Image (cartoon, rainbow, N blue to C red; front, side, top):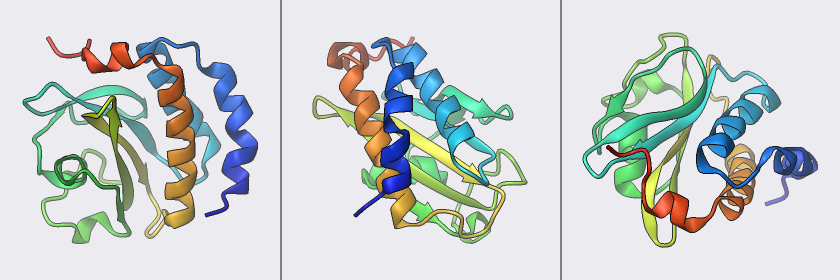
Amino acid sequence: MQVPQYQEKLPELEAYLVGHWLTDFANFSAFVFQSMPAINWTGFYLSDDQSLKLGPFAGKPACTEIRFGRGVCGTAFSEQRPLLVPDVVAFPGHIACDSASRSEMVIPLAQAGKWFGVFDLDSPDLERFGPEDLAGVQLWLRALLEKVPVAQVARRPWSG
């Protein structure tokens, strides 16, 4: 799928990436938050092998822990597949961290064959996310994960 607007911004994103997981995840969240219209939250939830814990993000304070299989993030992680949710109110078990959020896109993350978390995007607009957004954000995520050394992510420095 062609994603020219995402491809055009790729060099800007790459300029922010330095190869340190925390710095890059934080800058990635802020970059996506600023680069995409109609977004009210972007960020990472990272697995500690027990649940998903809040990682670097941009937006209002958020839920700090999500159980595997619960809500959009926990479901995407457990099923190891991206989820585009046009109306979060209609999603069974949706976790409302921000009542202003109406649609959501969650992309599970793996590196070196190990699933380690999700990248989550929320919007105040219904049906905000489509296949082109998914392909574009996945393009950006590939750039991020190519820059961050596998060992940094594989050893899960965020888990106790």
